[in-house]
Length: 265
Image (cartoon, rainbow, N blue to C red; front, side, top):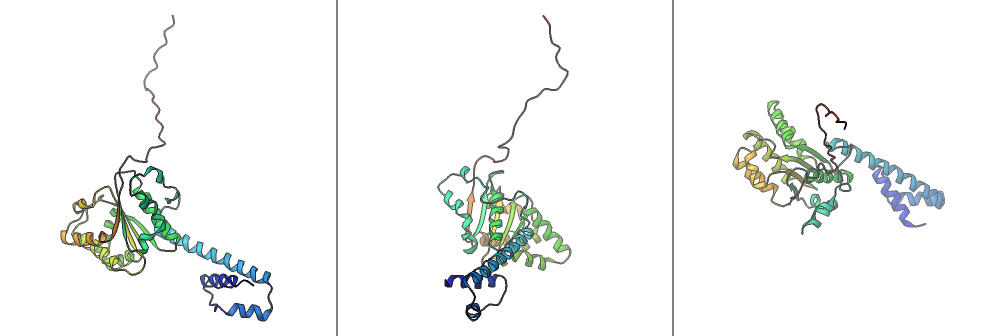
């Protein structure tokens, strides 16, 4: 009997939470004189159950991530062929998820419709598929949540919640202005994630260059500290070009008013 099948059984059992010592099943199979067919059936059954459990975990992570489940944004349905430039390979290598394992933040900067949010969502979705927690929210939602947390005296639990995901995506920096207290809380969030152990990264999208972000936060000292930690070790993709939106747009020219009478000669 090929030893690898026992390794597969042990690996599947581990995923299913079954405490199975490496040598336990081979010993049992030997004592019970199990045939190769019997062992293969068991290996296939455990592998199938492990696959179902893995998919259940992924489905739960995706549901809790706030990423769109209907018409999801993925790397597979992003048109990389529209992106050109000497650094395009860096962008195409994003699905390898090296950034999150290297603790590198990501930022996608550019005008409307070039795919910034698509790429951010695709990265978060890929993290979920690798059983890492991701969470998506717009900067305006973050601002509102921080304000509500202050009103309800729950800022600590709110920051704790946002520190936990391995991948935190903040979309559309520059769509709202953070007041002084929310800027300080934003810094606290960045600071705690900066010190977080394990695989983690933050992803930002914005129409604005990072050197203009100070226009949307209040408290310069806190902002500068936060930006230092965001861009201390980050990959910033500046995407220029025309919007993807409306590429399937059809235009029909019509005229309203009374019909012109036809002249009969």
